[in-house]
Amino acid sequence: MFRGAASLSLDSKGRLAIPSRYRDGIRDCCQGKLVVTVNNTQEHCLWLYPIDEWERVEEKIVSLPSFNPQHQKLKRFLLGHASDVEMDGSGRILLPAPLRDFAMMKRSVFLVGQGNKFEIWSEDLWEARRAQWLEEDLDTDNLSLEMEQLSL
Image (cartoon, rainbow, N blue to C red; front, side):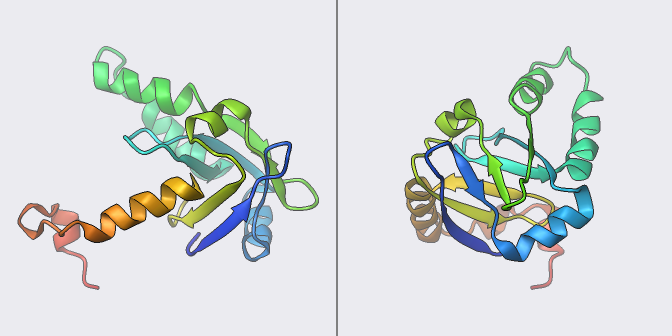
């Protein structure tokens, strides 16, 4: 499970050093093999999955009917932008330039654990979106059934 957040820096080649607290878990679960892709929503961030978790997600996406325009759009974004990456001996991964461009990444990035995956954000964009989310009121009248059943 990936949880927590970290402010990190990309090096001049676009490599990201995975925080040491996650490295052993990533090596144990997927031998350092990961998949990075774009977020399929309105957010300009990246999703980073261990390969085994990605394969489960990919199987579900591939099984969606292609004749549905929304399904096809999802396939184009998630599958079409998916890139295999491998953690090197120093715990770094190379984020492909087109994905860095999509996520508007320069040097400072923010890694956010999401349980089964990470989100990788431009730090500037993360700070702006976080401030916006903090200002928004939670619409408790329109919570999904799953959220209503959470006991926090």
